[in-house]
Length: 213
Figure 1 (tube, one colour):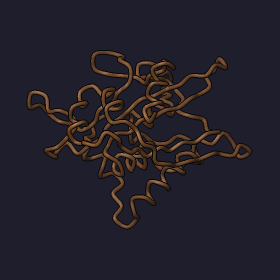
Figure 2: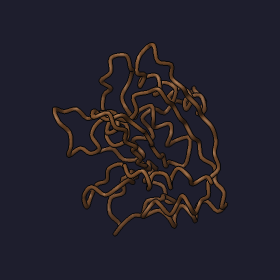
Figure 3: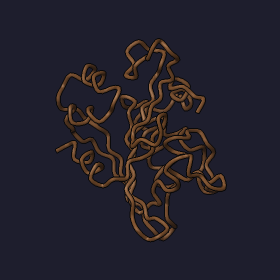
Figure 4: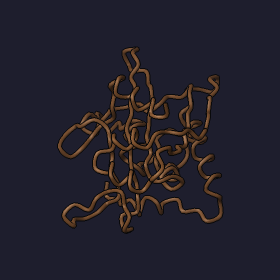
């Protein structure tokens, strides 16, 4: 990706529509685009859930201290959007596994923001509308999906992405050695020295699911 955090945050600037309206519109459209078929009703839910700051921040290497310094209160709030009866974030877990230029839903939404949508019934580009998630909150979004694999088994996938304006002085991401700041970072399991891919270990994912407890 050549984008920076600030450029992504400007992609769908909309001065006429309230931020809450944008959030509902984009999240509902995302679920509708992932429908399994016209005869399968989609279930959609949006809510606000409390969670423990220290239990959450410790999982984000590189910004743990910055998170704790910015958010003083032990109890924090998160916006949780859920859907079911949808296809989920399918496709390869990493760009290295792509075959025949088939990126899949997961890579396009989380890692390849702004790639064009392939589904004929869906509009726009993957990720462009979803930048509202980074704008309405503090910039950190956690994605979770449970999908059915080709062999009939199920797999859970969890990854996190942070998008922030890298030009600001109070950024969460550190400026290492006064180098170029991009304002974008991902968390998951290590794939190489320079990249990650989503977590698939059920035990690790269950710990993150229970942060609010």
